Image 1 (cartoon, helix red, strand yellow):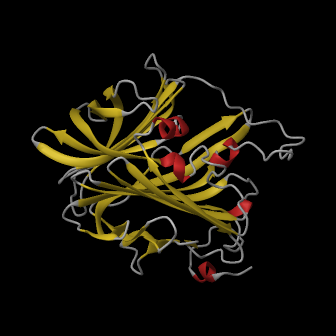
Image 2: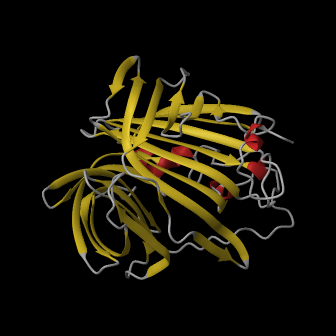
Image 3: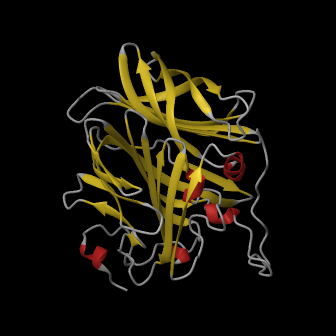
Length: 370
């Protein structure tokens, strides 16, 4: 089937854009988008996932104010609208000149709406190396990602009150990924009475204790991104990667991050391994080091956006031709914390490097502890 994307001179296989050149159910294209004000009052998290071989496209938007998190999520059948980036009340937007991207959330039953766009202040940087992993001979991760940081503008409506999003005081982080990726939908149990996996070996999900980190930081004259996983003993697990790069027009050479040592402070007695702040010592490929400190200002649960499953839904799961859900959560409620345990959290952080102050997002994930 020919679709509008086929008018672009971008083909890389002898086929049309309505499908991909693999039948793997885990093939996806995903967007993650975060924006927050530098006082830490608001945090917006949003995402969109296109699962071509599952015939699913889904999206979510979360807004945190204080300890209250508002969520809207939606899913629809992908075809025939393969090129469309609207899912229920949520639309992922790309400007005509590709200089800005963002999300619009139309009025809905869950008390929030917004229109926020991001404009990059640094060029995009490609993840190096690409993510690749096999499990029992099968490729479960083979994907590429790029990152960009910038400033946000637009508006936000919470509970009937409208707030302007001013680029002077709002920062953004985003990433785009595509390829074969272990899907959150794999972590959902089949519905009662339905043997979805009949004749198939269940996925291997070793329950080991490990620590995962993904960090993005932007300062006035440089940006940093690094991520990886470690055992409790500090042993590296899988691929680590990261990079230091500079604003558009700055010709300084980008430098790879080759090692990171963490000293992160957890908030006592929290079942979700809440992070208060910390210190990172970064080693670059030229042998130089950077010591950065940060403090957490606010956070939101990405579990409600489909990571590892939430209330019967996970990213990539078939929910029917059209589906919308949402709720408001009190993150200080012990019952809510128990429900969100084991999920991914994003933190809006204030960062310091010497006398410089910057802002960023950290994503710590600790499996098997707490």
